[in-house]
Amino acid sequence: KVGHVHMLRPCLGSVFFQVYRCILEARDKELPRASASLDSVIELLCTAVLLPLSTLDPARPWCPRVVATDAAPGGHGEAYTQLPVDVVQSWSKLACHRGDYSCLLADEGLHPAEAGVSHMSKAHLPLRDFYLTEIPRPGGTAHIALEEYAAFNWSLERRFLRPGELGHRCLQLGDNTTQVGAHAKGRSSSCAFNRYCHQDCALQIAGDMVPLELWLPSGDNPSDRPSRVYAKRHELAKKKAAEEEFQRDSAGCVHLPRELLTHIFVFVHLFSGPRRP
Image 1 (cartoon, rainbow, N blue to C red):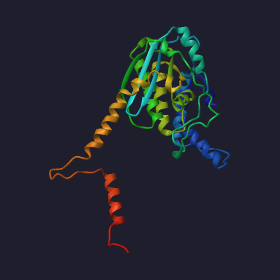
Image 2 (cartoon, helix red, strand yellow):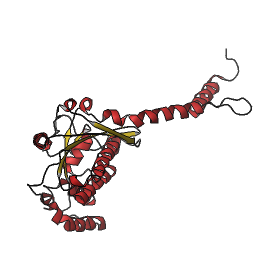
Image 3 (tube, helix red, strand yellow):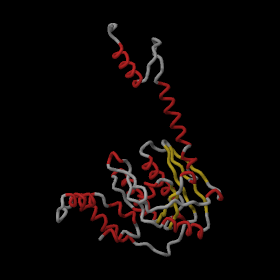
C-alpha cells in the first residue's frame, strides 16, 4: 500500500483525495472493484513522483526556535523563542501521535472527532519562563480551523526567511484540535481543509523541513495576544460599518438597517387595518 510509504512523511498523504472518494463509493455500493477516475490516476502519478521524498533521516538536526501560532476572526499571531536543543527534543516527544481524523462543520458532513476517541493529549509547557517575540498580521474571517491552519502555514513560510532553519526538524505549537490533528495525520476529508494540507506539504518539501506540532490549552498559547491585534481592528471596522447604516440623507431622513426595516414592515402589516370589535 502506498499509505505505508508515507508513514515517515504524513504530509504526502494530502495528495490523496479523489482516491479515497472512489474507494468509499465502491464500499457503499458493495462493488468488488473500484473504477479509478482521471483525478484518482493523477493523484497516484503524483504520489509516484513524490516517493523519493518520503524518506526521513534519523540524524536530521533540530531547530532551536520553537514557534506558536493562533488565529482569531480578522487576525493571525505568532510567538517564538529560542530553546536548548535538548529541551526541544524532549518536548517534541509529546507530539508523536497519529493525529485525528477530524473535519470542520457537522452540517456539511464535517465534524470534529467524538469525545474519548482523540489520539492527542494537551501539553502543559512552562512557556511563561522564556522570553517570547510576538508578531501579528491581518487574517481572514473563514472558519476558525481554516484560519488556524493558515496561521500555521504562515509560520512555516517565515522559516524560509532564516535559511539556517531549512533542512531541520522543528517544533510548532497550536491550540486548535482540528488543525493539529490534520497536520499530524497529513490530510483531511474536507476539501476546503485539505487545501491547507496541500500548502503544508508543499512548504515541508520545499524547505526540507519536518515540523512536529504540539497541542496546547488555549490559555497557555503565547500567540493568543498577537492574534487579537488585528482582530480588534476587525471588530471596530464592523461596528463602524453598522453605525454608518444610520446615516441621514440630504432630506434629513434616517436610513435604518435592512433587518430593522423588515421587522417594522411585519409589525405594521400585522397590526394595521380597521378597528376590530
